[in-house]
Amino acid sequence: MKKLFGMLAGLCLAAGAIFLQRSISQGPLFYREAVSALPQEMERFRSDPVQGRIFYKAGDSEEWLDKLPNYRGGFFSLRRIKRIHFTPRYAKTNGLYSFIYFRSRGQGGLITFTLYRKRANEYLAIHRLKKGLAAFPLIMEQSWGKGDELIFEFSGQGIVYFSRPIFYRPTALPKREYVFLIVPDTFRGDLIGAERRGVRLTPNIDRFKKDGVYFPNAFAQSRNRQDAGPDDPDADLTSGRALHHLRVSWRHGAARALGIFAEFRSL
Image (tube, rainbow, N blue to C red; front, side, top):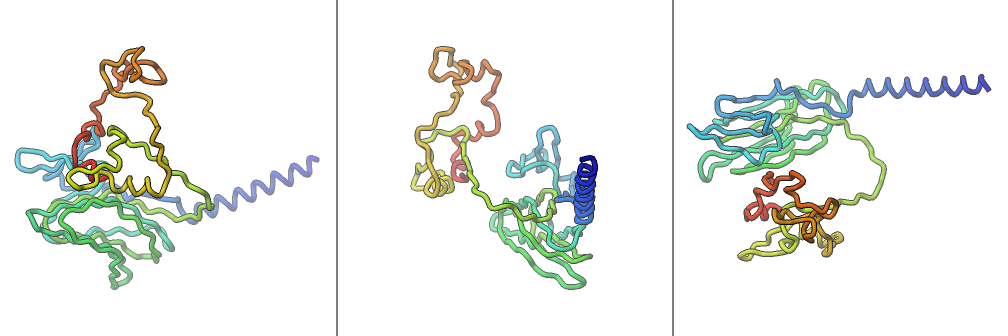
């Protein structure tokens, strides 16, 4: 029996060593580019780690760039053309993620964003977008060789932001069924599918509703009413108290968007 246990322990140790060696040789599943490798023009921008926001300085005033996902990224004023170079640490296939935002200066102006792969002295344009205003996640997978470079190129005039690029190693996932549960925040359910002046308020959610399952009789666990009491049907279902008794404030980012038509058009 002792010999059997010894053999099993030896097999487990050998399998663990092989797995560890393979993981080390392939590198981590993902890594982020260092912040020090990103351009940050602090003369025209201000990043606030406490609020997690970036502000653009325009004269004596500051503008909060509310479309940005976080304050950790590269940001600068674009005056003509700017290229940012990255070198993936590992060869073979790499996935890439970064959030790109740019806004041209003046009406009718355009900015061109081009993603290049540089191999030796050859440049291959992988992705290109030309717009006056853009805010989008950049996600793609490419095969990289040793010494290849990834280049973000922006041309035009305006302001530019991109989040810290994340390089990841694609892995094969087992086939499975996925369920996406969408729970909207701070707007009434009857806004779904509604129109205002001939414009649909929630076109993307409408598409999900058409292809999925819609629960018209679902109820929120509480409503944000200051006058809700223990006997009020609008009180919290789990505690019987109103939100202000639970010290939950309605003054958060999503609530501030309530009633703003532009927010609904983006859904």
